[in-house]
Image 1 (cartoon, rainbow, N blue to C red):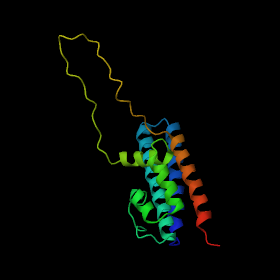
Image 2: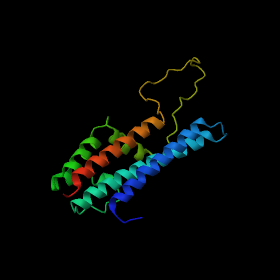
Image 3: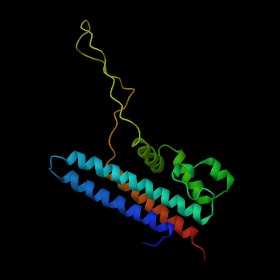
Image 4: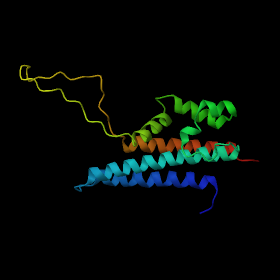
Length: 173
């Protein structure tokens, strides 16, 4: 494979697509380990989507010859400090997307960070024999819903479209 920066981004977007395709097959499967396969492919897709984002950041940083061009995490490039040092429109857009929690990019970064957090056991109330058997349920803690294949595919399409648009602006005439 060529050693151009864009090849890594393309490869990661493609690999995310393969993982999502395999996730869809696992969802349709009646295999005993279908849930494990779905989780494995979900994490694989998320890993590759983050890698594609990092690849895109490397493309932008390489084009503008930023000192952070070799950053090992996308978050190191998607900061206000980097943006204030050199005003780059592509970085500005990515920073803006990353800072707003409701955007697909912020959700992708959050979901990727969650992969590295240890699982937390639900806190159960201690059984008190003097209390009635009906327990109050706390509505403060929303139940965590696993990422759907459709949501991950949406992120992939958004990242793909953003990559194409940025590359059109980055290409030298």
